[in-house]
Amino acid sequence: MSVVTRFAPSPTGFLHIGGARTALFNWLFTRHHGGKFLLRIEDTDRKRSTQEAVDAILDGLRWLELDWDGDAVYQFARQERHAEVAHAMLAAGHAYRCYCSPEELEQMREQAKAEKRPIRYDGTWRDRDPSEAPAGVDPVIRLKAPQTGETVIDDLVQGRVTVQNAELDDMVLLRADGTPTYMLSVVVDDHDMGCTHVIRGDDHLNNAFRQAQVFKAMGWDLPVFAHIPLIHGSDGAKLSKRHGALGVDAYRDMGFLPAAVRNYLLRLGWGHGDDEIISTAQAIEWFDMDGVGRSASRFDMAKLTNLNGHYLRNADDRELVQLTIARLSANHGVNVGAVGQARLLAGMAGLKERAKDLNELAENSVFYVRDGVQPLNDKAAKLLDADALATLAELAETFATLEPWDEEALDAAVRAKAEASGQKLGKVAQPLRAALTGSNASPSLFEVMRILGRDETMARLRGQS
RNA sequence: GGUCCCAUCGUCUAGUGGUUAGGACAUCAGCCUUUCACGCUGAAGACACGGGUUCGAGUCCCGUUGGGAUCACCA
Image 1 (cartoon, rainbow, N blue to C red):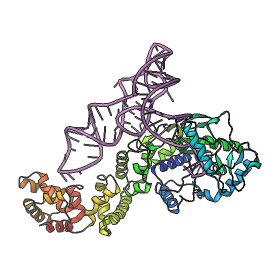
Image 2 (cartoon, rainbow, N blue to C red):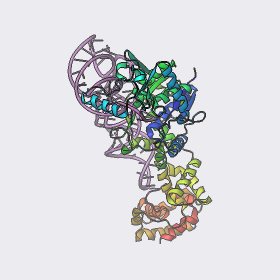
Image 3 (cartoon, rainbow, N blue to C red):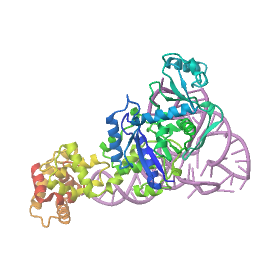
Image 4 (cartoon, helix red, strand yellow):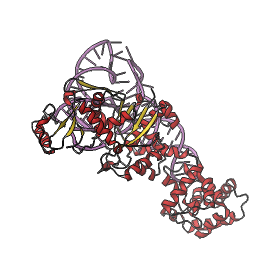
């Protein structure tokens, strides 16, 4: 039997980091087993579902490079089929009509709470004769769930989990207005889509029991469940918008690389020995549910950042140049011409090992693409005192006729200058760096000068004095 | 509150009855160095607690504590 999985987000907001990990695990599991990874948009809540959210989720998945098979299924479009199943269950005696009003239900819950009894539907209409139905009330259709015995889920992550059927009440399958509830829709869709494995967040574990009852009532095969632990914020509380749950687009904006995010999310709750840096190809080969832990984990921005630095340093220079150009334009309003692009490519090796994310990379790259005298940051301005300026003027003299214009010669010239004036190399090099880059920190000075070229170097030096 | 789940360094984890309890991030110290990074070396740092079972328990069982999830005509 070939594996079929699905990722089923509800489009009520962005694709958050927990959802992204669920998608990743589904995708990895499926690619590992050579199956199909389907996407289903659970948009049955018409009030909260938005097209923007659908777009955000799709964009997020694409950015993470998690491709799904076939077209996305929109759950709302399938409500007639869902209703059809509810009626089939009604006809088969696995469901019944309930005429309780929302007020009655509310009262029932209040009372249960007051008496400290479990809060659940009491089955008022379960065996009541339909002729007793109050006039003018649209009934809901409830599942006629077994009241004795137990329901067992053999979960790939959680193990064998058992719940007494007496703990479960008769949930609503079809609302009074004839629309299906989530519990019904999920089961029908998972069945119709042929899902063999349902991999989703831990928060659905309790739902699995009731869903299993619907599968059973319909005589359908139960998919294999795998409920993965949730991701918590750094404070241990559930990741919510207040606790820094961000959409994947936020991570993109912060300058993270999708490969780094994938690697981070993979290691959050899944392990393969001591391996930390795991390529996607390697992950597909290794990934399976038995490596998934059972406890919730905390989101750690520092580790993501470290991983991102690693992927940045190992990324292709040409790709980074393109990404940097985009950020330079977006963040700094700088348009990069042919000369700037050539300098970025030449300097990328030195640039990328000094950045943790793409925003930092762009910021550290500005001096390569902005011609002429560079604006100075505070520390750079301090470096350029009168003495330093005098030294720089002398250095400019030397540079004017230096041959060849390469790192070795540049290095020798600057060292000679420092030695001649009895100064430490840093005393000469730092002002030089400040004048050329506008900053007190940059890639290797000689590399910078080589890439900038003699004319630009001279222009920047002379512009300071 | 009922039900279900979880529990190894600050964080992510390795560990499947016998280990000096390993790695990674973060932290600290040092080396490298023209700066900043990278890199390298080293340090500190954990089996929540209490009972069992066993020759022997981080590993198995029970309890306690702590954390989490869920209890809708939301998904």
